[in-house]
Length: 184
Image 1: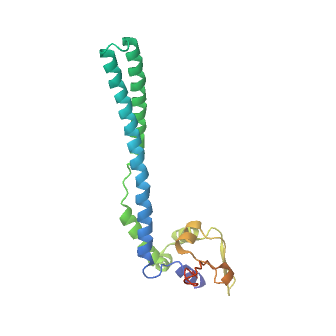
Image 2: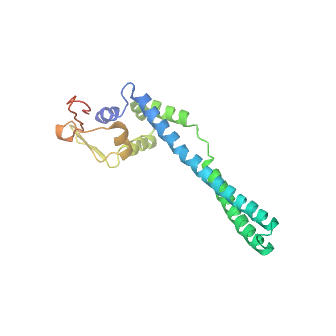
Image 3: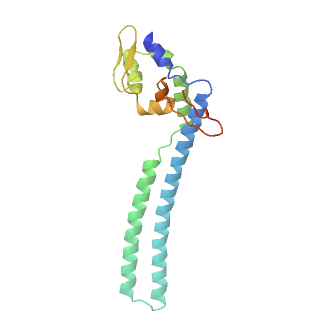
């Protein structure tokens, strides 16, 4: 029973589940900007090398460079294009895994809302998985009080579970509202 009481502390308060979803989706979408930028960089470099070949061809036709210079420029640019296209294809292949992030986040938050029931209905292996995903060290109970080791850093960030002693409370004070930002 003491463990279930502790486990219930990790169940999101009403309205917090929606906030978790928003934050996770926002972070995920921000990360996808990186993929678009990288893809654009590869395409830009490929285009620049194609333009280099085109310029060299124009210089050859106007007799500003020799045929051997043109062949050298073209070979170098084509080699760079091949390397860039291979890197682009690898990059696209590695990032092409499509994840239905919305449904994944929705399911995870819904599971958090019923964490205690999931624990009670799970077999011993899944119970250990739940405990191990929250606590990095052993959870001990002497019959009266329980002690926990370190929490998983992700769990600490998500739930911002702090000690109830005033010295460990996180707070931000402003001149306008001295209790603004007080976190229990």
